[in-house]
Amino acid sequence: MILAGDIGGTKTHLALFDNTTRIKEKRYISRDFSCFETILEDFLEGNDSKIRKACFGVAGPVINGMCSLTNLSWQIETERLKEKLGVDGVWLINDLVAMASAIPFLDPEDIETLQPGTPVTDGRISVISAGTGLGQAFLIPAGNGKYIVLDSEGGHCDFSPRNKLESELLFFLQKKYSRISLERVLSGPGLLDIYGFIRSTSNEGDSQGKFEAIDYPSSIVEKAIAKSSPVCEQTLKLFVSLYGAVAGNLALQYLSNGGVYLAGGIAPKIIPLLREGDFMEGFLSKGRFEKYLLGVPVKVVTDESAPLFGAAQYATAF
Image (spheres, helix red, strand yellow):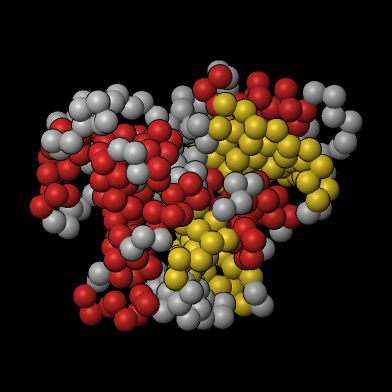
């Protein structure tokens, strides 16, 4: 058996695999637990199957087999997990490495296409994932349909506004944070901050003539898709445009002629908005390189279990 995990600031998702067949899985709310080991004990309670290998995708940089999660006060260590599981084959990998490891194995029904492009066989692939944070990873072709997966903390690069509205957003955020990274904008918390910014500059309230207090990104998404709140619609319009611009930058930085894949918890929920044009306009608006970007496939990963499968595939390779 292979034990695989997708460990993030919002949720932790664990599964047991027999080769590529999922035998058992369970989801947990991460903040309900003081440490990952407690979740692991609950998941493995009553399990009689021998675990041969284990691989966990974690939302943070992995250094010397250890990870302090970026958006959660957990520290996870490979050596401690080896002792707890009684297994030598244990790997901690960045959560986007886990997601990226699944990309070559995804079925057509696990993907929504925003731009078909002209994919290059065994081309370079970029993955960008907005959720609790903003993750990035890259797949470099290694021949025979195989890839080398590179991790990244590119989500913590500086946010650079493209126009007056985005400059005003930057100034708004600088009143709250000492530094504005891409993740401060393109994430669930970032979506809430954009909503606060739009609300502060808008004269439009809700149907009662006043603004509704919104505490959850999902509420903004629901109201924007339902077109029941002009402020939420404007919020998602700006968020989607920024998402497209950053994804387009990624495609140029790594010449992603095999495609750019949007993963994470937000993109699958806003596909109707991603199709409205602001995303692709942001993606393609790169001056002389617009023609190149028209050839880059752009897709959304809709299978929320993909990082689990990717972690299992990573373990299988060793």
